[in-house]
Amino acid sequence: MPTLSKRFSEICESPTMALNSTLARLKREGKDVVALGAGEPDFDTPAHIKAAAVAAIEAGFTKYTPAEGAMELREAVCRWMAEELQVQYKPRQVIITCGAKHAVYQGVLAVCDPGDEVILPAPYWVSYPEMIKLAGAKMVTVNPQPDRQLKITAEQLAAAITPRTRLLILNSPSNPSGAVYSRSELDRLVKVIHQAGLYVLSDEIYDKIVFDDAEFVSLAAYPEIREQLLLVNGVSKSFAMTGWRIGWIVGPEIVADAIKSYMSHSTSNPTSISQKAALQALNGDKSFIAEMHKAFSERRDYVQKRLNAMPGVRCFPPQGAFYAFPDISFYFGKQYKGQAIKTSMELCAFLLEHFGVAVVPGSAFGMEGHIRLSFATSLAVLEKALDRIEAGLLALE
Image (tube, rainbow, N blue to C red; front, side):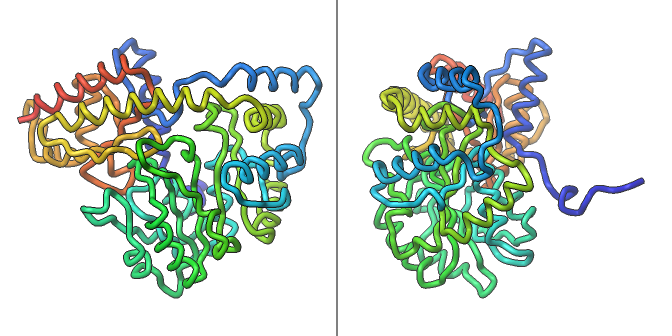
């Protein structure tokens, strides 16, 4: 019988996407399950953005666009970056993609050959390792020191670099930890990146969701690494447009040209109608971003308080994004009706099966002993879910 390619046979399904499938099945079966696994805002896409998409359909904007995306959207991205980040890019350096995930993957493919090494700080987003694997490259994980609030240091980065190192992937604000690298921390990391001459892919999709005194600093703010930087962002999180699938990657012209050619043979172009919606998102009223931020901030405070009040649970305050990543290793070795809990996956399965609450195991993010909870849902749902998590943990002996 014919077999799959080695490339595809080694790829694992995204744990978060698999969780969504499981939850959908349980709900079809009539089960009462509270889900804290979704990585998307629970807010609807703003009306003026949806109206732009409807207008595009009615105007017949339903044909191919350039593979790299419509010029007016690429120009809007450049204006957005000039306004938000005070940096200047040319439309030729911007490639519109089918979501930020697509942008990350293409960035990895563009600069990595089989055998190259990609440095990946843990905890990391679940898709990064599989993308590295698809490129034939080797993942080199750097684990944060216990006192660094789940962030790596410049010294750790320097120690991980070898002659085969090609790329560093940095995600700030972080999924899953909510960690945000400060300007001083980035200053030191950038010095190492610049001296080593490696590419850095900065995934900044959560840039508008930052809490308290944390400051989001884009790596685009460092001109010394401009020719080494692949910057990824999109409309999914900031504009509540996950299903529209519009992201972008911005970088040196040589990289942008290569990705453009690749897209011309793979996806052709991102959906024309979604591009019009994204254009309206960037050019139109953005007041709802502050409204979403206020809700996320309130939810973050509630989740943080509840988690740290649970016996044995430790959770750093998320500085950004909409996830909490508590350490629940205190409960490893405990049992429920003879069922032993030894891993985060087993703990998540236990909570789902016996207490009807779905969270994601830390092992999916390269850090055992943790679970990820999304607070991109209402306070009422969060209260119900955390009640169930607390009851489940207290039931372990």
